[in-house]
Amino acid sequence: MLSSTLTQKFTHLFKILDFDHDGLLLKQDFDSLGENVAIFRCLMPPSEIEDFITKRGQDFWERLQQFLSKQQPNRCNLDNWLKYMEAVAVTEEFGPFEEIARQAAEDIFYIYDKDKNNLLSKQEYMCFFVSLRVEIKFIDICFKRLDRNGDMQLSKEELSEAIQEFFQSVETKKPGNLLFGNPENYQFDTRKSLYTNV
Image (cartoon, rainbow, N blue to C red; front, side):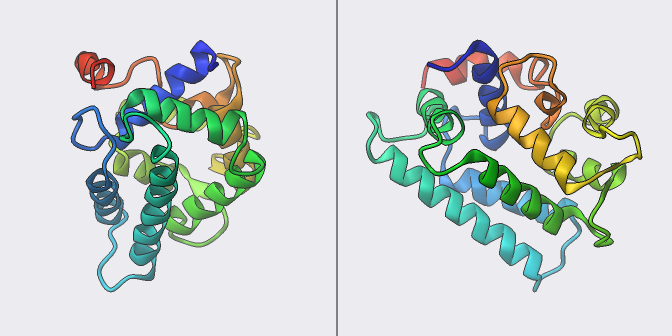
């Protein structure tokens, strides 16, 4: 059973991914999110990075669909999303989560590290924030907490550690809990009924 801390964080991520806020994750949500990332990353087609974003979204959706095929109902409402996240990050049914986190960090750097210096500046991380529609007012505190060595940049190691903390740590004060903004103050909290009744 998921802890209350992980439940809160995974619910926060669900709301980010639910692009149209209808209480379900559908393929069109991932398509729309991919388009949003491409727009705020200022990609002009044809673009290898945009193709990469599309492919990663498709791969994620297919894995999610395989999991959902064994659930009732076999759609991605919040309950099934929480089950999926538990399988991925807690019981690690899809392989060691440390490896998943490392690959996710590599993917984020490939998309957002515009100058290819293997570091994310605050501005590059801000692009990550905005493309996911996370409230920009959280960028300062989030970036400062994730930047563990205080050099005003994020390394792949710092980002990978943050990803692991967000998805696996039950401690409420871990810096990685702020990876996608503040899960305690999500901007669509006023629509909670959508996420509890679908």
